[in-house]
Amino acid sequence: MKERTRARSLALQVLYEVDLSDHLPGTVFTQRLKDFSLSPKEKKAEELEDFARRIVFGIIPLTEKLDQSIAEYAPDWPLDQIAPIDRNILRIAFWEFGISQETPVKVAINEAVELAKLYGSDAAPSFVNGVLGSLAKFKNEIFMSLKGL
Image (cartoon, rainbow, N blue to C red; front, side):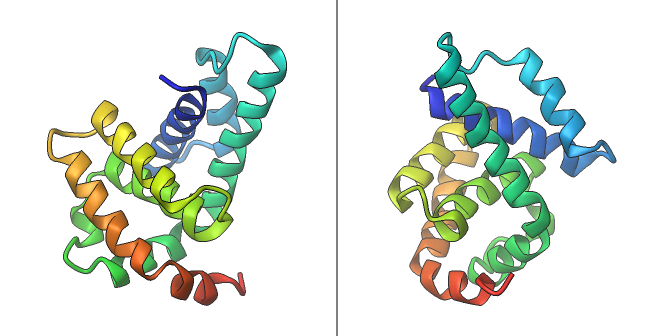
């Protein structure tokens, strides 16, 4: 698994646990980080930890807004019917290309599909690809509506 994919995987595990429990994000992040080797190189591991941390703590305060955008721009997939793991994969990719804008759309979608292959059901990769494809068409419009946050 590529290093940034490992960082996204860490972020996914944290977001998934926080989504399904009352656990504090900082505590969950610290615990998961102990179980995860992001890179054998210390400096690289610090960069990857920072990347995972930005994802987690960038998404958590925007969860409701991200979910509203997913529901609005991908209405064929009701949010309450999306598996929690898939919902968090969507949030990560959408946050990366739609909010932080530091990851190109194609890269974010490809990484999300890889996470869906690892953690989701057999149908998850195509589902995640389809939803993110719909969101990508409106990324500028969505970004402008969320920019005031």
